[in-house]
Length: 390
Image (tube, rainbow, N blue to C red; front, side, top):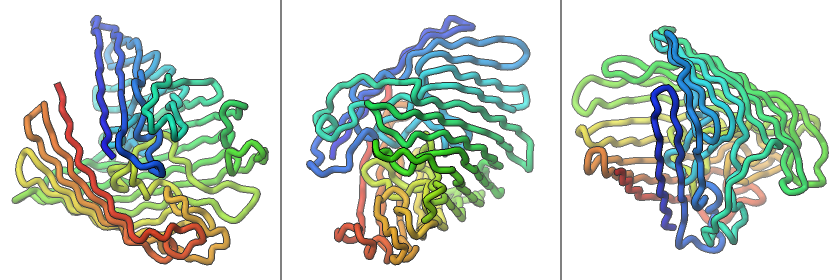
């Protein structure tokens, strides 16, 4: 598949106020009829931003954005503007950002997430132009507080709510969930240890499926944990070595509760490898441990390699993003091993850069023995991305 993403962003700065907009034109060509390409790859002529911004002044930096906007919050694991994926998450609403003199930050928001269209396979293959929409039937709200100077890094506390309502035009799982979380983080720096520890719990109610006949509300109890420790060495190619652990709950056998973690609007490329057409590993029903090495041969390039072992958290739920499931739980927990590598190089500073990567999923017993496991062998994925900016 050949995918193209063209973005144009403009902003007028009037001093204490700004007016801006951004257009993403995301298209794909050459995919087969049974391709997994969807709204993550195709969203032609999408107006992802159209906003008015205000600086409120005073001794601290307070900025309010009203309209359509994209945003990154905290680790980007729950709220993110996509960079690797061919399309992005965007919102319509109000977003307040406050920054203190010591680097402390507060973010508050209420928004209606944009629904990317078209979402049917025929129009996606045709790169059909449909206006993305928002609706009060889907609302997202919450906030975060980031405190610097804690344990040599920063501490973030957050809480995000999602309210979703079924309609005849758009059947959903009718989610009404709230996700509080905590993150402690210390950025990598030469000659010292770094860490990233984050956990979030999810509660509320949701239906098991989006089928129109499914009218049973289930109590939600789900969670995720990420723990990472690394060290950057102060010599040579400044190698960084890290150990990573991730756990995200899956749905159990109970018919009265829903336990699969909902990753909301987060990104996962930096944790779990390439997304888009591949993207086998996501932030639900997964236990994983692995090791990563990163090096910088020169100022223009960097290399990353990583190994992950993969297990199911719940034997009876589908493994992560694969859709492979054994409701009896008889296929075990081991899903397999993932190997990935990436090379990035700046060809023309500020203008042209190259990103080459691969992933290999060595399938374990579960991904081979589960009743709906495809008999296609191990998964091999590769990509070449070229980014041009002007």
